[in-house]
Length: 365
Image (cartoon, rainbow, N blue to C red; front, side):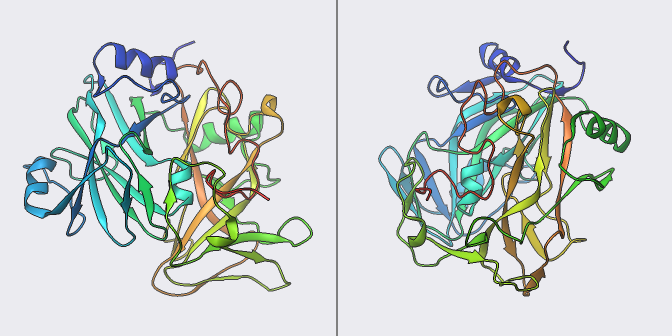
């Protein structure tokens, strides 16, 4: 059954490409379309700029780039993007959306877990990561590595885009009903509001060492975003163990990988997104990569949910996290139709049925 409003599934995204709503400089990669999103590819040039910017209603991105760029980088061969720098990269994909289709963007899971800050930009845009219905024009990605210098090339995928028709968000009552039927988070007393369903942090740990997370090291070697299972964890991360302390103190401007206490489930006819920052729960940001595809943690995939990995950065002041503290909320949306391939089933995934897990670039113990 196809709904009148909701998130476009994989077949609808393919149709959008076939009918000209989505175009690209080269054919789409065979695995580029995900169950409820499309991976976006870097083009063959990157521009180092003085500072982040928005084009504003009266400007194209290219016009502002001419004024703000410091130098141009050729991405046809591998290139290093340095920490603390801001780069603007024209993407291979462009849009000519129908008048009833809008879109939003988010970093990919592996991008967020490497602390790579990315935001999508469009011509005449007045906010990041939002594409209004009917947009016709190019796409650009702002890229700023925060902790690790990275190696990228044309075709590297750091961001993803999700297309929707109309209003797809579940209201509080619908979210409660769906949780009662499908168990969206493994919690005896779920905290559900109009803003979504709450997730809390696990600081008890698991395994003999009672590992609760990782803190990123500074001044590391570069990470090639295309290489999988290639890097030693201890060269880049400091493991954090539960030694009986009352909580975890987040140091300002340090980056942490933690995990939710609850297992998360996204049913096949729904998609989810985690809110990245809520000042009401503390001065920290959680989860750069907010998209959860249909089938994430779905039972036929081998369990009753998968825990959400949390990409955490404190702001301004030290902040104490305690076990079970709410750190973010999942917002659920309807799909237009069930995807042909679900996350982690028909499509393999590094992160299905996960617990605490670093990005796919590291050799897992």
